[in-house]
Image (cartoon, rainbow, N blue to C red):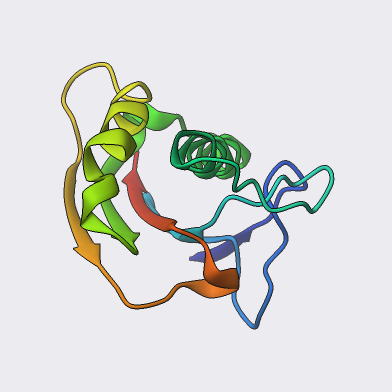
Length: 125
């Protein structure tokens, strides 16, 4: 029933976890940060580019499981500075057309590789 989802179109895990795990019709994506999967470079020139790369990584992982952004049920957004929220929200919103997923946005002290944003996703068919 449990299936590990892997794709080279999203960054490889940097620890003992999977990019995503499918369980039945549900898909649980690990948190994504702004690593370009082709180069391995961290995209950090501004929060808009960082958020866009995170969302593209999410999209690629969903696609590897045969899903799209329309399948996203819930997102969890972790950011270093709540002052960046409106800029993040503007990019984030471009990835959903309607029937937006549930979400929470939480300010945290630090994130892996000292990035500004990390997003995890739950999706379903």
